[in-house]
Length: 116
Image (cartoon, rainbow, N blue to C red; front, side, top):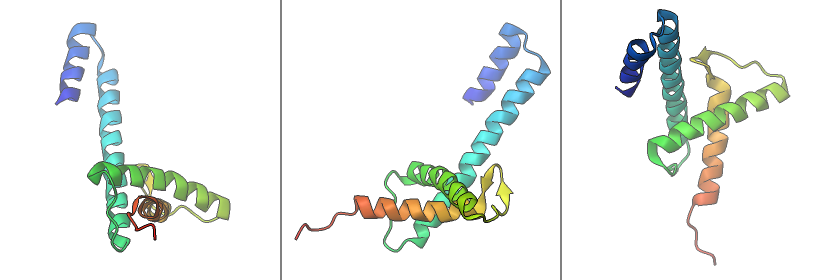
C-alpha cells in the first residue's frame, strides 16, 4: 500500500513520467519476489535440519535464504560448479546448500545445551 501511495505522489507532485513509475514498480516487485524466494529457500533449509528452528521466524528464514544464497553462490564459484536454475535473482541450488550451512550454524551457536 505504501508503494502505491509513493508512486501516486511521484506522479502528482513531481510530474514523474511513466518510465520512472514503471521502473520503481518493477524494481519493488522484483525485490519482493526475491525476498519471497529467499524466504522459501530458508524455510526449506530449516525444515531439513532435525530439531532446527531458526531464530526470528519468517524474518530469520528470509535472512537465511539471502545469506545462504550469497554463501552458496560464492562456494559453488570457488569449487567450479554451475549455479543451476535462477528464480527472481536467486540461484536455487547454491542458495539451498548455503542456507542449510547457515541453518546448521545457527542451530549450533544458538542451541541451549547444559554446560556439564
